Amino acid sequence: MNQIGCRIIQLESVDSTNNYIANLLKQGNVTHGTVILADEQFEGKGQRGAVWQAEPGKNLTFSLFWQGVNLSVEEQFMITEFISLVLVEALGRFGIEGKIKWPNDIYVNDKKIAGILIENQLQGSQIISSIIGIGLNVNQKIFGDYPATSISLEKGSDESILHVLMNFLEVINDRSRNGVLIESDRHDEYVKKLYLEGELAEFESTNNGCFKGRIKDVGKDGKLQIALDGGLREFDLKEIRFIPRNA
Image (cartoon, rainbow, N blue to C red):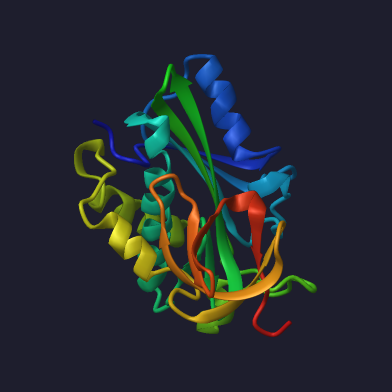
């Protein structure tokens, strides 16, 4: 099977790299491992319909196409875990310790450095392919009021965007030999890398308001498991938000 990055298409500007791959897929013109890299996304997507804000030419904004995922819909969170860990390992190559803010944002010192958007293509109850979009802050230094950081801010010097991409591709291909993205210890590693894991932290629930608890685990369905006074509770993405430590 082709490696991720076997075909790289670099664009100056596009609405979103995920959309670009989706259109290639409709045309039957995309193969496993294709990467779409853009200097600028003017409609970059984030989770919950958010817009990914990135200064043109300063960050790594790209999508990759993964054919032959061969997972059931119930197992789809495995993809999130896998890609999150790849990003954390890739950042480690630059001396940056990243943490995974559940479910798939990457944080460094309480600030966001990367985000992931995964769009799966289904056949019945099986995932047959995935379009995986990634935004990674590389050389941007000003983010307004948003709590974000970049490789440049963390290291104190700029990095080649293509060099950052090549490191990501090396990691993802090392961890997915022969196109297999499932690793036996992947889940435990993901939980250990979770932002605020095991710490007493503040959260806000849509049903119960603000409360304090400790992140303990993530279910196979991707729900966050938090220990609080009343025992262990599970939350999905729309039911809970993290309250910043400095709030």
